[in-house]
Image (tube, rainbow, N blue to C red):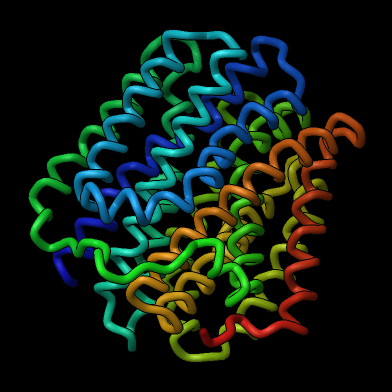
Length: 376
Protein backbone atom coordinates (compact mmCIF):
# COMPACT_ATOMS: atom_id res chain seq x y z
CA UNK A 1 0.00 0.00 0.00
CA UNK A 2 1.20 3.53 -0.83
CA UNK A 3 3.03 5.11 2.14
CA UNK A 4 0.88 8.23 1.97
CA UNK A 5 -2.35 6.21 2.07
CA UNK A 6 -1.01 4.12 4.94
CA UNK A 7 -0.10 7.23 6.95
CA UNK A 8 -3.42 8.95 6.28
CA UNK A 9 -5.45 5.88 7.25
CA UNK A 10 -3.39 5.16 10.36
CA UNK A 11 -3.51 8.74 11.67
CA UNK A 12 -7.26 8.99 11.11
CA UNK A 13 -7.76 5.65 12.88
CA UNK A 14 -5.83 6.90 15.91
CA UNK A 15 -7.77 10.17 15.85
CA UNK A 16 -11.08 8.27 15.76
CA UNK A 17 -10.23 6.50 19.02
CA UNK A 18 -10.24 9.88 20.76
CA UNK A 19 -13.42 10.99 18.99
CA UNK A 20 -15.16 7.70 19.78
CA UNK A 21 -14.32 8.26 23.43
CA UNK A 22 -15.32 11.94 23.54
CA UNK A 23 -18.90 11.69 22.24
CA UNK A 24 -20.33 9.24 24.81
CA UNK A 25 -18.07 10.69 27.53
CA UNK A 26 -19.42 14.21 27.11
CA UNK A 27 -23.03 13.00 26.77
CA UNK A 28 -22.80 10.89 29.94
CA UNK A 29 -21.28 13.82 31.84
CA UNK A 30 -24.16 16.05 30.72
CA UNK A 31 -26.69 13.37 31.69
CA UNK A 32 -25.14 13.23 35.18
CA UNK A 33 -25.46 17.03 35.35
CA UNK A 34 -29.21 16.65 34.79
CA UNK A 35 -29.27 18.11 31.28
CA UNK A 36 -32.28 17.06 29.13
CA UNK A 37 -31.87 14.80 26.10
CA UNK A 38 -32.87 17.62 23.73
CA UNK A 39 -30.24 19.96 25.23
CA UNK A 40 -27.60 17.20 25.07
CA UNK A 41 -28.47 16.76 21.40
CA UNK A 42 -28.26 20.52 20.80
CA UNK A 43 -24.86 20.74 22.51
CA UNK A 44 -23.58 17.76 20.51
CA UNK A 45 -24.75 19.45 17.30
CA UNK A 46 -22.18 22.22 17.77
CA UNK A 47 -19.48 19.90 16.42
CA UNK A 48 -21.18 19.18 13.08
CA UNK A 49 -22.25 22.84 12.88
CA UNK A 50 -18.57 23.76 12.96
CA UNK A 51 -18.04 21.28 10.13
CA UNK A 52 -20.79 22.84 8.01
CA UNK A 53 -19.65 26.43 8.33
CA UNK A 54 -15.95 25.68 7.82
CA UNK A 55 -16.27 23.33 4.81
CA UNK A 56 -16.26 26.01 2.06
CA UNK A 57 -13.02 27.47 3.43
CA UNK A 58 -10.94 24.31 3.94
CA UNK A 59 -9.70 23.92 0.32
CA UNK A 60 -8.60 27.59 0.25
CA UNK A 61 -6.84 27.32 3.62
CA UNK A 62 -5.11 24.09 2.56
CA UNK A 63 -3.83 25.69 -0.64
CA UNK A 64 -2.56 28.70 1.31
CA UNK A 65 -0.92 26.98 4.29
CA UNK A 66 -0.38 23.47 2.93
CA UNK A 67 -2.57 20.45 3.62
CA UNK A 68 0.03 18.75 5.81
CA UNK A 69 0.64 21.78 8.05
CA UNK A 70 -3.09 22.47 8.40
CA UNK A 71 -3.78 18.85 9.37
CA UNK A 72 -1.05 18.77 12.01
CA UNK A 73 -2.27 22.09 13.42
CA UNK A 74 -5.82 20.75 13.72
CA UNK A 75 -4.63 17.64 15.56
CA UNK A 76 -3.08 19.99 18.12
CA UNK A 77 -6.20 22.17 18.29
CA UNK A 78 -8.32 19.08 18.96
CA UNK A 79 -6.10 18.12 21.89
CA UNK A 80 -6.41 21.64 23.32
CA UNK A 81 -10.22 21.55 23.00
CA UNK A 82 -10.41 18.25 24.90
CA UNK A 83 -8.24 19.76 27.64
CA UNK A 84 -10.55 22.77 27.95
CA UNK A 85 -13.65 20.54 28.01
CA UNK A 86 -12.09 18.68 30.93
CA UNK A 87 -11.30 21.89 32.80
CA UNK A 88 -14.51 23.82 32.12
CA UNK A 89 -17.52 21.75 33.25
CA UNK A 90 -20.09 24.34 32.19
CA UNK A 91 -22.74 23.68 29.53
CA UNK A 92 -22.66 27.27 28.20
CA UNK A 93 -18.90 27.17 27.54
CA UNK A 94 -19.14 23.71 25.99
CA UNK A 95 -21.10 25.16 23.03
CA UNK A 96 -18.21 27.24 21.57
CA UNK A 97 -15.62 24.61 22.54
CA UNK A 98 -17.46 21.87 20.66
CA UNK A 99 -17.98 24.24 17.70
CA UNK A 100 -14.21 24.81 17.42
CA UNK A 101 -13.70 21.07 17.83
CA UNK A 102 -15.96 20.54 14.80
CA UNK A 103 -13.84 22.88 12.66
CA UNK A 104 -10.65 21.00 13.55
CA UNK A 105 -12.25 17.60 12.95
CA UNK A 106 -13.56 18.80 9.61
CA UNK A 107 -10.13 19.83 8.33
CA UNK A 108 -8.63 16.48 9.34
CA UNK A 109 -11.28 14.41 7.54
CA UNK A 110 -11.51 16.53 4.37
CA UNK A 111 -7.76 16.46 3.82
CA UNK A 112 -7.35 12.78 4.78
CA UNK A 113 -10.09 11.66 2.39
CA UNK A 114 -8.60 13.79 -0.38
CA UNK A 115 -5.19 12.18 0.24
CA UNK A 116 -6.64 8.65 0.18
CA UNK A 117 -8.82 9.09 -2.93
CA UNK A 118 -6.09 10.98 -4.81
CA UNK A 119 -3.51 8.24 -4.17
CA UNK A 120 -5.78 5.17 -4.55
CA UNK A 121 -5.51 2.93 -7.62
CA UNK A 122 -8.93 3.12 -9.39
CA UNK A 123 -9.50 -0.62 -9.84
CA UNK A 124 -9.15 -1.27 -6.10
CA UNK A 125 -10.51 2.04 -4.84
CA UNK A 126 -13.48 0.36 -3.15
CA UNK A 127 -11.23 -1.93 -1.14
CA UNK A 128 -8.93 0.96 -0.15
CA UNK A 129 -11.95 3.01 1.01
CA UNK A 130 -13.21 -0.10 2.80
CA UNK A 131 -9.91 -0.37 4.68
CA UNK A 132 -10.11 3.31 5.56
CA UNK A 133 -13.69 2.92 6.84
CA UNK A 134 -12.67 -0.20 8.78
CA UNK A 135 -9.76 1.51 10.53
CA UNK A 136 -11.88 4.57 11.33
CA UNK A 137 -14.63 2.32 12.67
CA UNK A 138 -12.14 0.39 14.78
CA UNK A 139 -11.01 3.68 16.30
CA UNK A 140 -14.57 4.75 17.05
CA UNK A 141 -15.29 1.32 18.53
CA UNK A 142 -12.25 1.38 20.82
CA UNK A 143 -13.12 4.84 22.10
CA UNK A 144 -16.33 3.92 23.98
CA UNK A 145 -14.67 0.74 25.26
CA UNK A 146 -12.29 2.94 27.27
CA UNK A 147 -15.27 4.01 29.39
CA UNK A 148 -15.74 0.40 30.49
CA UNK A 149 -12.46 0.58 32.41
CA UNK A 150 -12.35 4.34 33.01
CA UNK A 151 -15.12 6.23 34.82
CA UNK A 152 -16.58 9.42 33.38
CA UNK A 153 -15.49 11.15 36.59
CA UNK A 154 -12.15 12.92 36.83
CA UNK A 155 -9.35 13.60 34.37
CA UNK A 156 -8.40 10.09 33.28
CA UNK A 157 -10.65 9.69 30.18
CA UNK A 158 -9.64 13.15 28.93
CA UNK A 159 -5.94 12.43 29.48
CA UNK A 160 -6.30 9.21 27.50
CA UNK A 161 -8.08 11.01 24.66
CA UNK A 162 -5.46 13.77 24.44
CA UNK A 163 -2.61 11.22 24.54
CA UNK A 164 -4.13 9.25 21.68
CA UNK A 165 -4.50 12.35 19.49
CA UNK A 166 -0.88 13.42 20.03
CA UNK A 167 0.30 9.87 19.20
CA UNK A 168 -0.71 10.43 15.56
CA UNK A 169 1.70 13.35 15.05
CA UNK A 170 4.89 11.28 14.57
CA UNK A 171 3.15 9.28 11.81
CA UNK A 172 2.21 12.44 9.92
CA UNK A 173 5.70 13.92 10.37
CA UNK A 174 7.38 10.82 8.88
CA UNK A 175 4.96 10.69 5.93
CA UNK A 176 5.10 14.38 4.96
CA UNK A 177 6.88 13.81 1.64
CA UNK A 178 4.39 11.13 0.54
CA UNK A 179 1.21 13.19 1.00
CA UNK A 180 -0.07 15.28 -1.94
CA UNK A 181 -0.89 18.98 -1.64
CA UNK A 182 -4.01 20.62 -3.06
CA UNK A 183 -3.51 21.98 -6.59
CA UNK A 184 -2.86 25.70 -6.22
CA UNK A 185 -3.80 26.52 -9.83
CA UNK A 186 -7.19 24.83 -10.05
CA UNK A 187 -10.24 25.80 -8.02
CA UNK A 188 -13.74 24.45 -7.63
CA UNK A 189 -16.44 25.67 -5.31
CA UNK A 190 -17.76 23.38 -2.58
CA UNK A 191 -21.22 24.92 -2.98
CA UNK A 192 -21.22 24.46 -6.78
CA UNK A 193 -20.52 20.75 -6.29
CA UNK A 194 -23.81 20.18 -4.44
CA UNK A 195 -25.84 19.86 -7.66
CA UNK A 196 -23.61 17.15 -9.19
CA UNK A 197 -24.27 14.32 -6.73
CA UNK A 198 -27.41 14.85 -4.61
CA UNK A 199 -27.90 11.15 -3.84
CA UNK A 200 -24.29 10.76 -2.73
CA UNK A 201 -24.69 13.78 -0.48
CA UNK A 202 -27.95 12.38 0.95
CA UNK A 203 -26.07 9.14 1.70
CA UNK A 204 -23.38 11.10 3.53
CA UNK A 205 -25.95 13.08 5.53
CA UNK A 206 -27.78 9.87 6.50
CA UNK A 207 -24.61 8.15 7.71
CA UNK A 208 -23.66 11.30 9.63
CA UNK A 209 -27.06 11.50 11.28
CA UNK A 210 -26.72 7.86 12.29
CA UNK A 211 -23.26 8.42 13.73
CA UNK A 212 -24.10 11.57 15.68
CA UNK A 213 -27.36 10.19 17.06
CA UNK A 214 -25.83 6.90 18.17
CA UNK A 215 -22.63 8.41 19.57
CA UNK A 216 -24.46 11.06 21.58
CA UNK A 217 -27.77 9.41 22.50
CA UNK A 218 -27.45 5.61 22.23
CA UNK A 219 -25.73 5.39 25.66
CA UNK A 220 -28.68 7.33 27.11
CA UNK A 221 -31.10 5.06 25.22
CA UNK A 222 -29.43 2.09 26.90
CA UNK A 223 -29.63 3.68 30.36
CA UNK A 224 -33.34 4.33 29.89
CA UNK A 225 -33.83 0.67 28.97
CA UNK A 226 -32.30 -0.27 32.31
CA UNK A 227 -28.72 -0.99 31.21
CA UNK A 228 -25.74 0.04 33.31
CA UNK A 229 -23.35 2.77 32.18
CA UNK A 230 -20.74 0.21 31.12
CA UNK A 231 -23.33 -1.94 29.32
CA UNK A 232 -24.61 1.11 27.44
CA UNK A 233 -21.07 1.90 26.32
CA UNK A 234 -20.67 -1.72 25.21
CA UNK A 235 -23.84 -1.45 23.09
CA UNK A 236 -22.36 1.59 21.32
CA UNK A 237 -18.96 -0.08 20.90
CA UNK A 238 -20.56 -3.21 19.43
CA UNK A 239 -22.58 -1.13 16.99
CA UNK A 240 -19.44 0.58 15.73
CA UNK A 241 -17.19 -2.49 15.68
CA UNK A 242 -19.36 -4.08 12.98
CA UNK A 243 -17.49 -1.83 10.56
CA UNK A 244 -14.25 -3.59 11.41
CA UNK A 245 -15.53 -6.81 9.87
CA UNK A 246 -17.89 -5.64 7.13
CA UNK A 247 -16.62 -2.37 5.56
CA UNK A 248 -13.91 -4.09 3.49
CA UNK A 249 -16.44 -6.54 1.98
CA UNK A 250 -18.76 -3.59 1.29
CA UNK A 251 -15.90 -1.79 -0.49
CA UNK A 252 -15.11 -4.95 -2.44
CA UNK A 253 -18.77 -5.21 -3.52
CA UNK A 254 -18.66 -1.54 -4.55
CA UNK A 255 -15.84 -2.46 -6.98
CA UNK A 256 -17.87 -5.34 -8.47
CA UNK A 257 -21.62 -4.58 -8.55
CA UNK A 258 -23.94 -1.64 -9.10
CA UNK A 259 -23.32 0.84 -6.31
CA UNK A 260 -26.89 2.07 -6.60
CA UNK A 261 -28.24 -1.43 -5.93
CA UNK A 262 -25.79 -1.83 -3.07
CA UNK A 263 -26.94 1.47 -1.57
CA UNK A 264 -30.58 0.36 -1.69
CA UNK A 265 -29.76 -2.93 0.07
CA UNK A 266 -27.75 -1.17 2.77
CA UNK A 267 -30.47 1.43 3.37
CA UNK A 268 -33.32 -1.03 3.89
CA UNK A 269 -31.16 -3.27 6.07
CA UNK A 270 -30.50 -0.22 8.26
CA UNK A 271 -34.26 0.35 8.53
CA UNK A 272 -34.63 -3.24 9.76
CA UNK A 273 -32.02 -2.63 12.46
CA UNK A 274 -33.97 0.37 13.75
CA UNK A 275 -37.08 -1.79 14.04
CA UNK A 276 -35.30 -4.65 15.82
CA UNK A 277 -33.38 -2.64 18.44
CA UNK A 278 -36.30 -2.00 20.87
CA UNK A 279 -37.31 -5.66 20.61
CA UNK A 280 -33.85 -7.14 21.29
CA UNK A 281 -32.37 -4.71 23.81
CA UNK A 282 -34.42 -6.22 26.62
CA UNK A 283 -31.99 -9.12 26.98
CA UNK A 284 -31.92 -11.17 23.76
CA UNK A 285 -28.53 -12.57 22.73
CA UNK A 286 -29.48 -11.64 19.16
CA UNK A 287 -28.92 -8.01 20.12
CA UNK A 288 -25.15 -8.26 19.65
CA UNK A 289 -25.01 -9.67 16.08
CA UNK A 290 -27.84 -7.30 15.12
CA UNK A 291 -25.81 -4.33 16.37
CA UNK A 292 -22.79 -5.48 14.34
CA UNK A 293 -24.81 -5.67 11.12
CA UNK A 294 -26.83 -2.52 11.78
CA UNK A 295 -23.76 -0.38 12.38
CA UNK A 296 -21.92 -1.80 9.37
CA UNK A 297 -24.71 -1.23 6.83
CA UNK A 298 -25.54 2.26 8.13
CA UNK A 299 -21.91 3.40 7.86
CA UNK A 300 -21.60 1.44 4.61
CA UNK A 301 -23.76 4.04 2.86
CA UNK A 302 -20.89 6.49 3.36
CA UNK A 303 -18.34 3.98 2.05
CA UNK A 304 -20.31 3.55 -1.19
CA UNK A 305 -20.63 7.32 -1.59
CA UNK A 306 -16.89 7.92 -1.05
CA UNK A 307 -15.91 5.23 -3.60
CA UNK A 308 -18.23 6.79 -6.19
CA UNK A 309 -16.83 10.27 -5.47
CA UNK A 310 -13.25 9.12 -6.11
CA UNK A 311 -14.19 7.36 -9.35
CA UNK A 312 -16.23 10.21 -10.87
CA UNK A 313 -14.21 13.25 -9.80
CA UNK A 314 -10.53 14.21 -9.57
CA UNK A 315 -8.29 17.20 -8.94
CA UNK A 316 -10.06 20.38 -7.86
CA UNK A 317 -13.47 18.73 -8.27
CA UNK A 318 -12.40 15.97 -5.86
CA UNK A 319 -11.29 18.60 -3.35
CA UNK A 320 -14.67 20.34 -3.70
CA UNK A 321 -16.42 16.98 -3.39
CA UNK A 322 -14.59 16.15 -0.16
CA UNK A 323 -15.60 19.57 1.15
CA UNK A 324 -19.22 19.03 0.10
CA UNK A 325 -19.22 15.60 1.73
CA UNK A 326 -17.95 17.13 4.94
CA UNK A 327 -20.56 19.87 4.78
CA UNK A 328 -23.33 17.31 4.38
CA UNK A 329 -21.81 15.24 7.17
CA UNK A 330 -22.07 18.33 9.34
CA UNK A 331 -25.66 19.00 8.28
CA UNK A 332 -26.69 15.41 9.00
CA UNK A 333 -25.02 15.52 12.39
CA UNK A 334 -26.36 18.95 13.26
CA UNK A 335 -29.95 17.99 12.47
CA UNK A 336 -29.74 14.43 13.79
CA UNK A 337 -28.91 14.91 17.45
CA UNK A 338 -31.46 17.66 18.19
CA UNK A 339 -34.21 15.91 16.21
CA UNK A 340 -33.59 12.58 17.91
CA UNK A 341 -33.26 14.29 21.29
CA UNK A 342 -36.59 16.09 20.86
CA UNK A 343 -38.19 12.86 19.60
CA UNK A 344 -36.95 11.09 22.75
CA UNK A 345 -38.39 13.86 24.94
CA UNK A 346 -41.77 13.57 23.19
CA UNK A 347 -42.04 9.84 22.34
CA UNK A 348 -39.74 8.36 24.97
CA UNK A 349 -36.57 6.45 24.15
CA UNK A 350 -38.01 5.02 20.91
CA UNK A 351 -37.84 8.48 19.40
CA UNK A 352 -34.24 7.53 18.64
CA UNK A 353 -35.12 4.42 16.62
CA UNK A 354 -37.93 6.26 14.82
CA UNK A 355 -35.54 9.02 13.73
CA UNK A 356 -32.96 6.57 12.37
CA UNK A 357 -35.49 4.26 10.71
CA UNK A 358 -37.27 7.06 8.84
CA UNK A 359 -33.96 8.53 7.65
CA UNK A 360 -32.77 5.33 5.97
CA UNK A 361 -36.26 4.60 4.62
CA UNK A 362 -36.11 7.96 2.81
CA UNK A 363 -32.60 7.19 1.51
CA UNK A 364 -33.64 3.77 0.21
CA UNK A 365 -36.63 5.23 -1.62
CA UNK A 366 -34.52 8.07 -3.08
CA UNK A 367 -32.00 5.54 -4.42
CA UNK A 368 -34.75 3.96 -6.53
CA UNK A 369 -35.37 7.20 -8.42
CA UNK A 370 -32.07 9.15 -8.47
CA UNK A 371 -28.67 8.49 -10.08
CA UNK A 372 -25.67 8.31 -7.77
CA UNK A 373 -23.97 11.24 -9.48
CA UNK A 374 -24.04 13.41 -12.59
CA UNK A 375 -21.15 14.31 -14.87
CA UNK A 376 -19.79 17.83 -14.57
